[in-house]
Image (cartoon, rainbow, N blue to C red; front, side):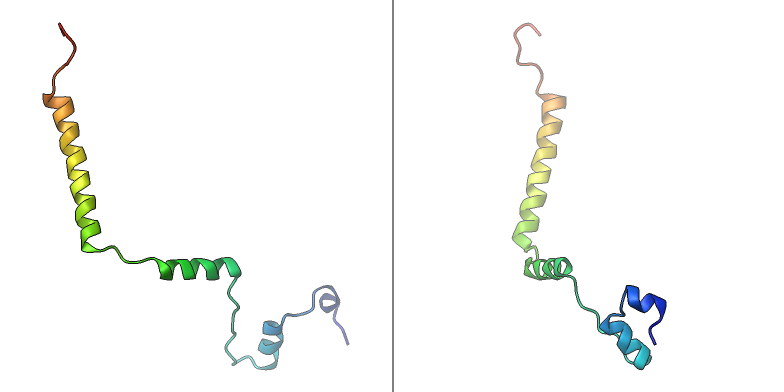
Length: 80
C-alpha cells in the first residue's frame, strides 16, 4: 500500500537502504562541483622555500620604499 508522500516523492536508494537495514552505513555521492574542488585542491602544490623567501623580500622592499618615499625623499618640485 502506498502512503501519501510516497506517491509524491519516492524514496531514494539511500533512504531505502536505511529503512531496510538501519545499521548499514550510508554511502553518500559527492556532488560534481565539490569533486572538482577536491581535485583542484589536490593539484595545488605546496609553497616552496624559494616562494616564501621571494614573498617576504618583496614585502620588505615595498615597506622600505614606502618609508623612504614618505619620510626621507623630500619634494622634487623646484621651490617647494
